[in-house]
Length: 251
Image (cartoon, rainbow, N blue to C red; front, side):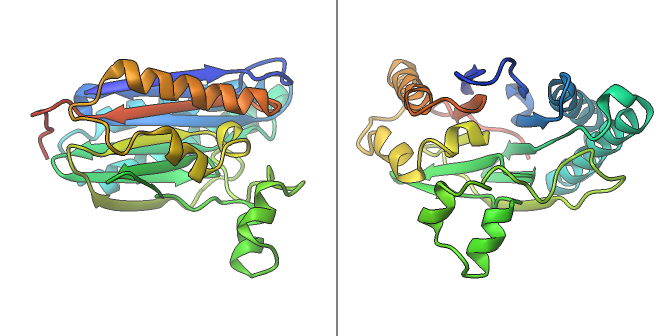
């Protein structure tokens, strides 16, 4: 199992409020993008990762991955909300969370907020998540186009987050996974600066399998450089995940 991780605070924000984590042995991968002043965003995203991981381990062997992912997201929400209510300096904090689990030939993704999951299959990037954001709702209602949403001044306003309420709705979906696929989890610091088509073009559709880490490291560097060169207005975090030849996971 291979993972390439990149994170950068960008060129405007004083701190990095993103968090990421993975357990390759369990096929579990997370990214989170915190929000809130006075370091509360950092706290929220870190709490999300910690609480999610603890809840996931506590339900090992109990349930289907989709149920475990949703349960872990809800526990992360409960933990962040409790801290927000009981710690005045962290009042109102919250975070996005996108979590992916790989088992056998299935990829299961759970998410809250606008951190995304992309699947690269047969040389084509496919978005697996739908942003919980104001501009996504405007696109859905036909008020603006997807191209307009990319540069909309309100594109950072999210409509769902962990920790802002005592309960949260979690979107969960499962899709087929093949050994040649790649998975990208990312915060909006990347996707606000780099389009899905641009990400797609960075990957060589004719790359031999098994994939060379060196080549994918270069892709990761190019993705990060694009986000920073275009302003780096937000923290940028992403994971690129792929499978070794002959490797698999137990269901």
